[in-house]
Length: 330
Image 1 (tube, helix red, strand yellow):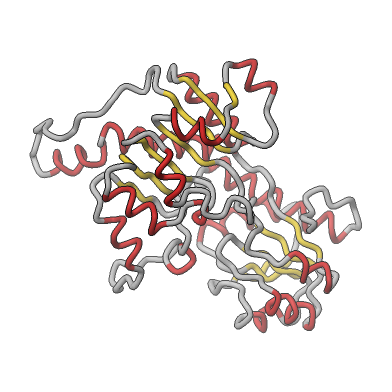
Image 2: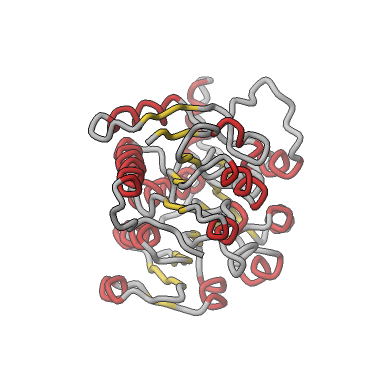
């Protein structure tokens, strides 16, 4: 197939090319994101490949249909940036990579916890300036702390197992409870009980109409004072303005995020010589107890391998008329 690949970085090209030798698809790479203003770049192609911050809304899909695109394939798990109803209306199939390396994201969530807690990032910078003081580097033991996990799918389950290994008491909330995790010692609780009892809360749920702004001022008022909140899932699970207020009141003790609700304007770009016009993220970066990483939770060799393999298999399945096991339907 002839495929237009949008929002590409050097690593996208490296890994897709690495595994395309068996498929021999014609991949044409574009640095630009896909949105209603850039659909003309897909003229002459049969399919497009997109990423989390591309905007495939009703207008973009209508234009894609007009130029003959039959398949939209996401090289990621999330699909909240696609209007599935519009895609179905125009008979455009949507596919994704439902699971690539749950351990990659789960381990990054743990990295955020450990860094925020033991302040290794601050110690690193101090030592580089020959400052070997321990002042203000105090952390706490993870052992026997209560960790609340919201969402126990593949990533959430991997995270639960890691925290059990630290000797934590793991409680969880999900609409579907995992018997396997229960047998390992995870205890399911209501959301309010999880808020009240967790020293650390980690988010591993999708972004839906029900979960958008799951953490707003009401939720922050219910959490244990000084608790840590970690988000490696979707940015809009947290209402940033309310998180800032909770941090200012010291109700929220620590915040670690690998995603941000307005990240499409920031992440995956080098803005070191630019003025940042997003006042909310600037305010977040001013807090000493906030750690932000640029959506790198998926960024491991193993995950990139699997993303490329599954993405290319999706195109081959579509081209050969095989069952579309990774199709997303509304």
